[in-house]
Length: 468
Image 1 (tube, helix red, strand yellow):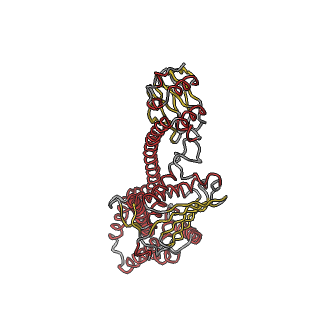
Image 2 (cartoon, rainbow, N blue to C red; image 1 turned 180 degrees about the vertical axis):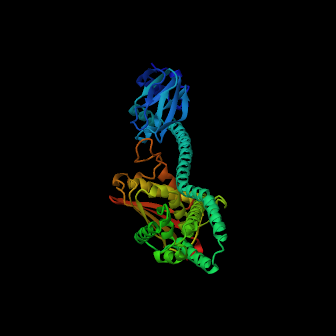
Image 3 (cartoon, rainbow, N blue to C red; image 1 turned 90 degrees about the vertical axis):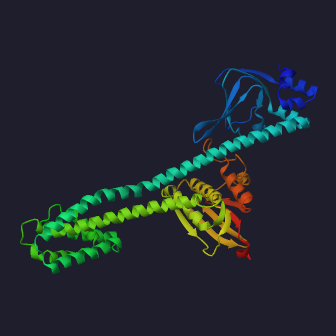
C-alpha cells in the first residue's frame, strides 16, 4: 500500500489535506515493473497517473520512424498527467530503464483529486506547462533539423543533374578542342583556298547560332538527322551515325554538304571527309559548352534561391517580396513537385513588399506547400494566388487533395494535433504556421476545405502608405 510519507516527497501532494492523502493511498495500485518494460505507448489512450517511487523511466518520441530520446524520470517523480488532462493520444512513449516500483492512480481518481483540491491542481498544471514547453522545444528543434535535412536532400537532388552536366562538359571539351586543333593544323598544311575556308567558317557560325537558339522541333530534327545519315553513308564517312546528330542540331542540310565537299570528292586521304568531321566536332563542342553553361546557371539559381530563402545576407526583419519567397520555396521543393504536381501561379504583380521576418515567412510557405503535396499524394494541382485585400496582402495556397474532415478543421492549428500516422508528424507544423502568421506578423490564417480542394489563406498587413 502507498504510504503518505512517500506521497509527500512530491510537491503536488504536499497541497492535499490528510483525508485526501489517505484517499489517494487507498486507491493507488502498486506495480513492480522489471527493466525494459514499456509503461506507456505513444499514440495510445491514457492509462492513468503514475507515481514513481524507485527506479528510472526513459521518455522517447517517434520521429520519421526512429525513436528519439527526450529525457527521463527518476524517482521520486510522477507522470501520465498530460494525456489524462488532454483526453487524447499519449504524446510520448515511456519504458523502464531499471527495475521500478510505481503506484498507479486511475484517470477518474486523478481527475477527482485535481478538481477537488485547488492547490494540487495549480501544482500539477505548473508542471504540465513546464513539461509541454520542454517537449515543444525538443520537437521544434527536431522539426528544424528535419526541415533542414529535407531542404538539403532536395537541394542535393536538384544540384546533382546540373553538376553532372557541368562535369561532363568540362571533361569532354578538352580532348575535343585538341582534336579540332589537330584538324586545323592538317588543313592549314594543304594551303587551302581562303574563299572555301571562309565558306566553311560561315556554315559553322550559322550552326553555332542554331545550337544556341534552336527553332527546330524534335520531329523535324529527327528527319533531318536521318537524311544526313543517309548522305554521310553514301559519301563513305566511317561511323556516320556519330556525325549526323551534331550536324542536324547545327541546322546543316544535305545540299550544304554537297557544295562544301564538291572539291574533295576525288581525294582518298583524310582530308576527303575531315571538313565534315571538323564541322560536327565544332558543333559538339558548342553543345558541351551550352550544356555546361546551363548546368552552371542552374546551380547558380539554386544557390541564389537558397540564399534568398534563408535571408543569409540581411537582417532579421526586412522588406520582403512575397512572390520571391513563394518561388524560392517552390524551387527548393521542386524535386517533390516533379512526381506529378502541376503548379499554377496567379500573382498580383502590383502587390508591394511587406515588412516581415523573411526566413520565418518562408517556413510558412514551406509547411503549407509541403502539406499540400502530401495531401495530394504527390499528384494533382497546386494553385498559388496573391492579391491585395484591403489593408492586407492575401495569399492562397490551394491543393486538389482529399480535403480535411469537417470535424477536425477547427483543431488543425492546435499544438501536437496531427492527422498523419504516428511518427510521421509532430503536430507542430501548422501550429508553427499559425504562430508565425498571427503572433509574429499580426496576420490572419484560415482554412476552407472540402473533398478535392483545400485552401489555406494567409493575410499579412501591408505597409500603411501602400494600404491607403
